[in-house]
Image 1 (spheres, rainbow, N blue to C red):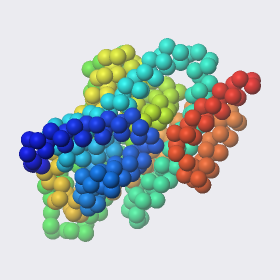
Image 2 (cartoon, rainbow, N blue to C red; image 1 turned 135 degrees about the horizontal axis):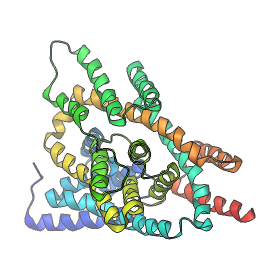
Image 3 (cartoon, rainbow, N blue to C red; image 1 turned 180 degrees about the vertical axis):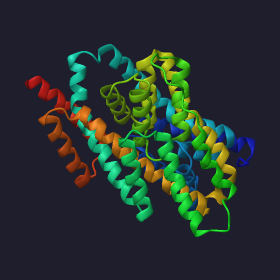
Image 4 (tube, rainbow, N blue to C red; image 1 turned 30 degrees about the vertical axis):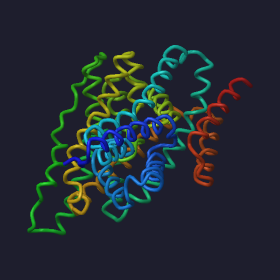
Length: 386
């Protein structure tokens, strides 16, 4: 059920939500964790839209459902603040600025990406992206691997992924494995109705394999990814690699790293990588349809979960499933990072650049955007010298 308030108050709140998330979409660099920190500072501490506990409740809900966490926080906050219109505006206004920026960069990439000068930028950016992913993997892993079962699931998923297992099956298996562990602790109580929702992931059909590009298949593939992806936006790498590089063959490893780099260097959701991929494959129609496809499930899941938010927050069953899919996502993330590293670390300079970036990120906690800019400049400088 949506929040209720008077018409005059609703109009004011709609304007507030739209303006706030438009500004955030143009200025929120640094990835999902940074986005959520900015939202907390603004809507809890400065604007007083939410109290601390309610913000944590919404964050828990965003982590419990598939999709980009920071985008879903924008949708949830918009819903809490201004009802159904706020739900649409919160997410759309956060996504739109990033989409427009990525669209402009995608046009430039297609127009100039084969030129040496454009390649110089990505030469220095790619090793930085690998370092950023490693930092995220380390930070998330320390929180996600809580005990022996979660460690076993994570390592098992990594091994099976490297052996060629299906990404969606691995993700579902991770959640179901820890759901089973929780079930063993509650024998004779049966499996609650809420636990049957994750089982549906076993039956989600993958889009049919194809060698030729088509808009409908692009839409369905990105819609599937948006509907099942758990964890950090960096986990998007594993899904994009499995579908667009391995299964469909529409992208190369190099192009995928370039797409992720564009998503990293721009503000707003990392999932606007789909805008870049869509434009690369199908021009403006592909970019718009790809963006719609990958974000559409987030709006649906927020509308679905909001009425039962309080009950889900305290359920040991949903908590167990979430632990499983998160640690499985990290296993996938580790596997694909190694594969992408082979495409990015191609000579002594790129290897040293990645190592330096790792040291800086872990020691000084610098904003990733500045590090990416430094990598781009370093790449250009080396190419000019040679």
